[in-house]
Structures are given as structure tokens and as C-alpha cells.
Image: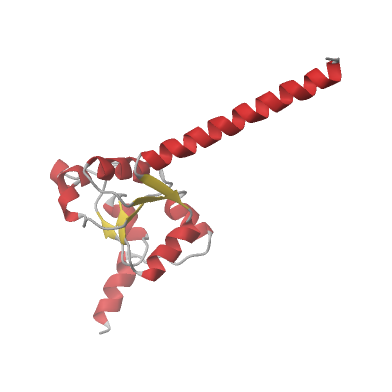
Length: 156
């Protein structure tokens, strides 16, 4: 084998190894019971109306902006929040219906943790919105604030 062929052979082996690692990581995510979805896929799920939208951020984050129709159950006391432990997802998990669940947070990290918690509690259709509400707003999708929701209710 000459030096040129050896270089191509090593490159091919490297590419196959990278492809294998990517494939095995994707299988691991699928097997965890959580499926990562893009904001576009999340928006489609919401538009069809067959998904429970769970926001796991803090009340302050939720009040400043959230996806319309989302239910707030914080994952943890992040960013200076001082909620009691009985206000958090671990204690309130039975409030989440046993149906298709779309979980989101600010960037997707807390929602991934919340999704794993839901799967461990027996939920089977759990979707993590990758990139969180930041990706949602970056895509140009609408959000509402608690002030918007309150003013809508006062006009009826």
C-alpha cells in the first residue's frame, strides 16, 4: 500500500468511526424515551393541538414571555427563584397529563432534565424543544407575557 492509499484508508476509517458514534448517540436519545424536536416541529405539534405544552422555567421567566397555552411547572429554583420544593416539577409531576408532552425552557437544558424525569415517572411521549424559547423567538414565532394574557381576559 502506498502512502496516498494509506491516507485515504485512514480517512475512511475515521469517517466510519464518526458516523458510528453519531448513530449510536442518536439511538441513545431515542431509547431514553425523549425525542428532541426543532422549534419548527414543536410549532407544528402545537398547531395540531394534540400536545400538552410544559414550560419548566421560573415564574419570572414565564411571566416575561411564554408560548401561548403553555403550563408552568418549574423544574428547579434557578436564577434566584425561591419556590418551595412542593412547587417544583418533582412534587407536581402528577399534574402533567399522560399524553404527548412538549417540554421547553430557556435553552433546552432544563427541559431535557425535565423530560428524563417524566420518562422515569412513566411518561412515554416526551418531546424536548431544542434551543428552548430563545430558538423559538429567534425563529420569529410569537410569545405572550402574563400581562398580555391578563389584558386579553379583561377585554372580554
